[in-house]
Image (tube, rainbow, N blue to C red; front, side, top):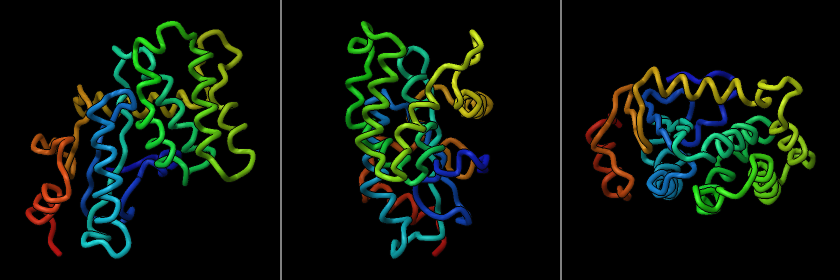
Length: 207
């Protein structure tokens, strides 16, 4: 599937010209999404990267899946999109760091925090992950500032709307959900390891 230019950093494994696509819908505050994210990093990135068996054959696109029953979900996904803007190469490392520390953004830990305090925590996390450019962390914080209009959102609100509309038009309800070449692949599980992914690709991809 296609990506608008501002979201190209959401391609996290494989190459843009790969004929097959895995669209993986993940929520930063979903434990099962975190489990699948680690599998993506440990299994799919090597398989689809240079020297991997399926390099040039399959690409993986991270699809932000905001789940509004978790109050902080909007804020953490804003943060991911902001990193994609200011330090594209840090999008996936930031995402992994956020998944590993997702418990800090669960319902109860954030229940006594204001939206501004949650964003401040995310700015601090970004500062730990983003190394270059040197001013990226400051630009990241600026993108999360509320606009001057009372209900205008932030500088990444339009991208957030795009990702939510994409999920809605495809009928995505929960995370993680995976599309293979545009169709939901219900057989894919967050518990899959190297063997299950290898078997899946063996059945789907011509070498």
